[in-house]
Image (tube, rainbow, N blue to C red; front, side, top):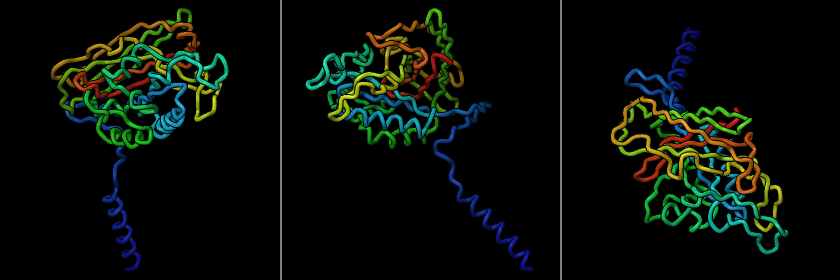
Length: 295
């Protein structure tokens, strides 16, 4: 009798645990409908607006790297050097000839302009998470680095709307990259509007000057640095109107890595292709992806 009692007690405990189970909000979503069993994972774009003469920007870089440590491939980070702190001039008190590297890009400067996101006008370090909350008359899209984790976690808790994959083939002799992107809007999500794709080149592990507080660091490791846009500042159109669910939209590009970007050596082993799909009406990013140039 006592044995039967313990068996019943154990069964009740197991049932109770089952009722209390909460699924992981960051878990990939398996789409239903239309027989689609593909696993879809939302990937969030973090844009860190920075400059080598920005005294607090290393703290934002630490936060960006912590996001990667926490969320792994669910986050893509791009470091955008733009604005006053990114100008290649030697600041007062710094060694002669320092801070002359130019990390700025045509696209980054356009994004940072008051006509668009105006990040550096509000002071750096700041950034955007999926470019969400943007309106031309407010600054709600500009997120301080202390809020990045909360913003990322909130977006990762939402189901994915689209898939995006990048496949690179690199020719070492010509330094040419053949880039294939495959975009797909998910069947279970009704998506309408106009969407475009931006493809970028980023470079990691660049050693150069950085001001950290009052300290001049000669061999600071600059990470995730935006170096160029492959398909223009605002990319190219993917679809307009009501999208066709589960239909793959393929785009192919060829890009040749220079030996250097404005005097900064370009090491192909430290370069990545970053791509993201965004809504052209409000610039909000639906999905991002990243792939090494040299696999």
